[in-house]
Length: 205
Image (cartoon, rainbow, N blue to C red; front, side):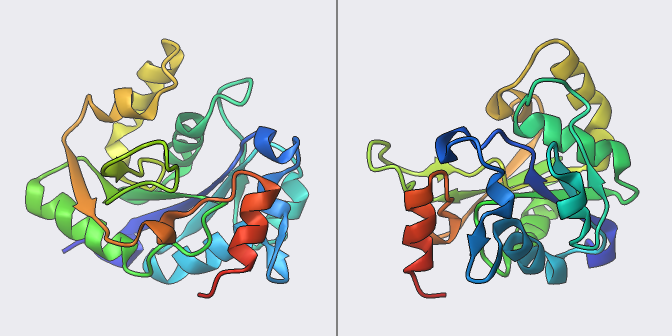
């Protein structure tokens, strides 16, 4: 069994926020707190140590009380750059990433991913929902930004990103990956736009 204190939690807040007009998405207010703080508080009981990946407003994120690390790859290279920032600083055998814009992800997320990773002898574990929030995409949808990974994958990810790789699915395909089904797609709803954020505000939970 993987102990909670063997997992470091990583909040991904390093994006451009392009679909929110370029604002720092993780610092947008949601129910009286910055959006990223909700993700941090949701993840905190599920892991041991915590850290944040951010590329702007570092002092604002540092006020959350956990270490903050920018991308080691230039030009806002996407979630994999955030993964790499976390892996480079991770001092536990496992790293669990969650995005800053999905504040109501399941409270048993890490528990279920760790069980699957162990049971399948995998190197990574990611959730899958029956469908995505995007109505144009039918069928089950992987949620790879929520990724439990062995910290020993740092060298693999470093090679992949240094060779110009940016797609999460192409990197995860290089490794044994456990997929865990979660029935509630709404729990993985992410606020990409200000309208999305308002929609989240109107929901329960």
